[in-house]
Length: 389
Image (cartoon, rainbow, N blue to C red; front, side, top):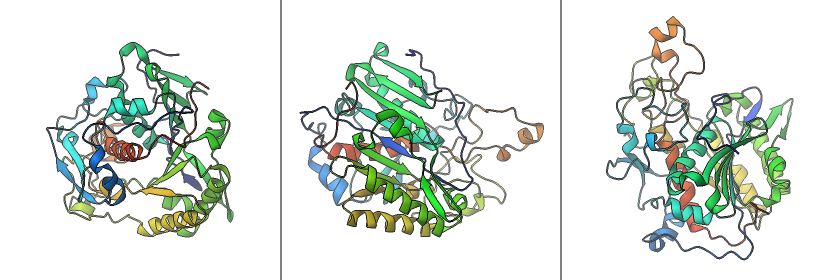
């Protein structure tokens, strides 16, 4: 057990690339004690909740500047924020990016209620599995809930050579884990195979997983060399789900791609520039960068439709469009650099600006707000027990 708010960065920012279907996988293991009752929604959320998550498209909308309600927490107040996403700590002065919220057309995202969520997670595990983007979402979730837990009843612990990091909430007998496992599947030589061992390592049985959320990074197109290879990898992923997932007890989500921001000319910026010095989001509704690959999303939709016909209901969390607008929300140069910068780099900040990851507080919190909306709608019945068994 570690009682310090310490999150090491040894693996942050490392991304696999050679013939890989990189998962950026987020796995939420929601395990409910036997006989547990369905929790009521937080006050003021119950009436409109059903329409929010069934008839309303949460992923079609726009950014709204809201300094009264956002951010949901302060960077300095979250003891677990990583130096890789803490832009204010590393010198960013304009902080307007923190005040933008996502507003779907025709409905509102339920207000995040940390106490309610922690009660929902009592005696349960949440596990984010994947690469550095998944790790950012894990840190976001910790920052969203940790202020509701007394200081002496929360800590970070490490296992498996720091590949598994667990945030422990003692009062709730709950953990929110991150498992570093960027390579979900391997594609090459005309075949593909699933490489998804972390769940087996930690739970002993994939069928004990209550909710699984798989993500897909922007670089996947180059990594698997085209839609056909991508489809082959997704088919293998689908077959794996069919064998290992208990359809009556596990909810599966697939998170769409997270864009990079390496061509400022896409949004009318200078040629050769990227996200460096960008301070405002893109407001043109429906904006899509030149490197977008809509054909890959159609491949995803096809794979998931086939899963539905097999009786496995997979939900797509299509976050790509809401991320497309946020050219202002990357770490850029405002982060702890893992390596010394050369004089040439220092003279040209664009050359080392991080336009892949996302600041906190910021857009990663929206991912967790959307996840929260689905958890809020879905009851506790039917999921399995996990922590403390």
